[in-house]
Figure (cartoon, rainbow, N blue to C red):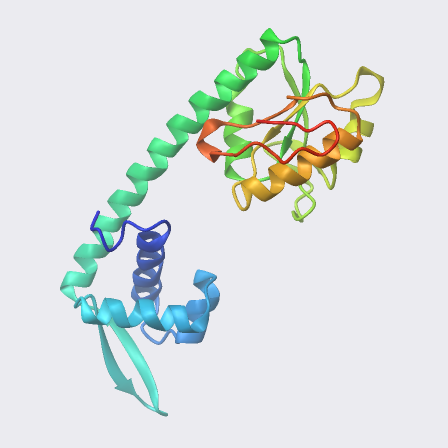
Length: 224
């Protein structure tokens, strides 16, 4: 991977931009920005970079519009980036599965049998696969921003209190952070909520790949 594409998410955005142009040469910068989830100005900057690198050509189209085409170099770069993406995705899956399995083993060793995941998405799905033969039961996924009713076959609830109610008299032993959108922010908010619900210190945990810093002390603070 080039140094220019080594910034977090940079090469992936470039790959998605090249793929979008390959699908539809009449794509607009505004629709590119929307599809890529970035600002219009940033989409324009990425497009100009691809043109400068010789990956994309621009041609005048009717009604004062522009058409974008991949050059032979652009097709080759897209193929290379696809390979990089698959390699990174496989490496991430392997690491995530290993670390989640270790977390479940740790929970089991501590006698924690009923846990919830915090954050719907890819990492939550990998976590459910990683449970294996563990005696630990995953009750639900907590995610107030998700419109999903289920994630990886588990019910999705909006807040920690709902997960605790779902646990009933048997109680909730721990929460595993699986949010990849804003993991540190989610962890700190969860730590405060957990303290308010009476979960003891250390019962909010996370895979190391999320690189969480200890949550600020707030009453009975929790740490990953």
